[in-house]
Amino acid sequence: MKHILALDQGTTSSRSIVYNERLEVVASAQKEFTQHFPLPGRVEHDALEIWESVLSTAREAISRAGITPSSIAAVGITNQRETVVVWDRKTGEQVHRAIVWQDRRTSEAMSAFREAGREQLVQHRTGLLLDPYFSASKLSWILQNIPDGQARAESGELAAGTIDSWLIWKLTGGSSHVTDVSNASRTMLMNIRTGGWDPDLLRLFNIPGSILPRISPTSGDLGTVDASHFGTAIPVRSAVGDQQSALFGQLCTRPGLVKCTYGTGCFLLAHTGTDAVASANRLLTTVAWQIGDQPLEYAVEGSVFMGGAAIQWLRDGLGIIKSAPEVNTLASGVPDSGGVYLVPAFTGLGAPYWDPDARGTILGLTRGSTSAHIARATLEGIAFQVADLVAAMEKDSGKKISVLRVDGGACASDLLMQIQSDLLGRTVERPVNIETTALGAAMLAGLGAGIWPDVDALSKIRSVDRRFEPTVTATNRHARLKTWKRAVKRARNWEA
Image 1 (cartoon, rainbow, N blue to C red):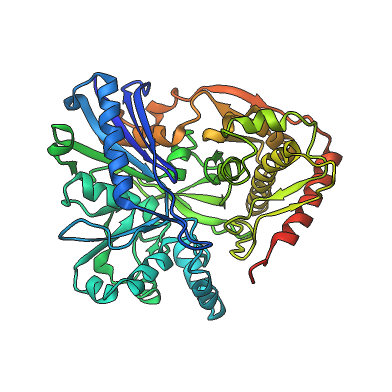
Image 2 (image 1 turned 180 degrees about the horizontal axis):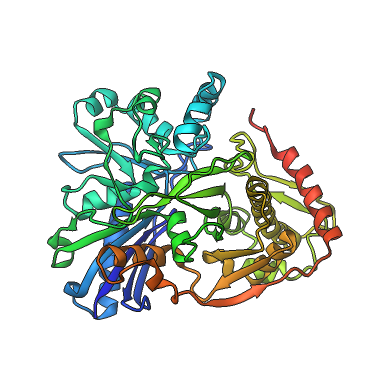
C-alpha cells in the first residue's frame, strides 16, 4: 500500500501525519516550538527550530507507522501563511528570526503607503489590503534591518520565502527554491491573475525579484526530498497555505461552499471557482489552489487574528485554566456571559475592520463577574468575530450562507460551536475529521502523485460528525450582535 506524508507546520507546533491510500491516519507526531515576543506587537519564530521540529516529527511518524520510507509515494506540505524567512544561500542559515503573520511592526509603513494612495494598486493586483499581516512589508523590514541586507539580497547572496519555501529548501538540500500559488498569493507581491511576481509591487516594497522562489502549482512537482533525511528520496507533490488546505480538505471544491477553521486564528473561506471575485466589504481575494496545469482557482477570505490564541491567553496570560479544553468546563458553569464582552484584539483586528491599532478589551465587568463569565465571553468573542465575517461575505455575494463547515482544534468544543450557530442563526456542520488542514495537503499530494485521478475521486472521503442548529431567538441574537458592535468600537484605534 502506498502512503502519503503530510507535514503540517502551524503557528505554535509542527505535526507530521502518515496517511494510507484511503486517507486514514496511520500514525502522527507533534511538537510545539518557541514563540518569541521581543517587543510589544512583535512575534518571531526560530526558523531552524521549526525545521528541526518538522524533521523530527516526520521521522517519528514514519517510525510509529511501522512502514519503510520507500512506501511513501509523496510528501505534502501545509503551513502557516505570511510568515517570512530570509536565509543565506550558501550556509542555509537564517539571517534573522522568521517574522510571524501576527507581527505588527510594519503598521506605520503600511499606514504611510495607504496615505500615499497605494492601496488601490495593491488590492487590484493581489486581492489584499495594506496591512502588516502580509509578507511583503515583513520581508522589506528584514532586508532593511540586517547588516547590508539590501546589498546582499541584490547580489544573490540571500534567499527568502514563506515557511513552505524554507521547508522545501531544507528537505531538498537546497536544490528547490519554490513556493506554490496559494502561499505566493499571500505575500502581497504576486499578481493573482497572472500567477507571477508583480514588478510594480516588487519596486513598491524595494524587494529584488531574485531573492524570491519560483512559483509552482499547488499540486505537482515541487522537488525531491534528499535521501539523507529519511533514507530514500521522496517526491514533494504539494505545498499549500493552511487555510486553502483546510478548504480543500473540507472538499469545498465548487463555488459557494464555505468553511471556517478555528485554529490560532479563525479563517472563513468561500470557494469562488476560476473567478477572482473582488470584495466590497473588506474581505480578501486569494488564490485557493492550482492543480497541475489547470486554471487557478480562487476564494474569498475573512481572517480573524485571535481565535484559539485567545483561549491560550486565558491559560498562559490569566492562568484561569490549566489546559485549553478546560475553558469549556469553566464557561459551562454559567448560563451566559453575565453581560461581559471580550474583544480579543490582542494583535489588532483583522477582517472586516483591518485595524492594527485595536487592542484587547473586556467590557461589562461587575462585582458579580467571575472567571467563568470571562471564559464564556472569550468563546463568544471568537464566535462574534466569525459572525462579522459571515455577514460581510453575505453582503458581497448577495446570498445567504445556510451551512458553515467547520474544522480546526477549537471546533471540537460543542459549546463554542453551539454559540457559533446561535450567533449566526445558521447550521454549523462539523466533520468527523476536524484536522482537515493536513488532510487537504495529503489529498493534493496524492493527486500530484497520481494516487487519485481527479478531485471527484475524493468526494466520498468526508463524513459529518454533528450539525449544530440555532437555539436562541432572532431578537436575542440581534441584541447581542448590536452590543458586540459597541464593544468593538471601544477596542478600535487604541494605539493610534
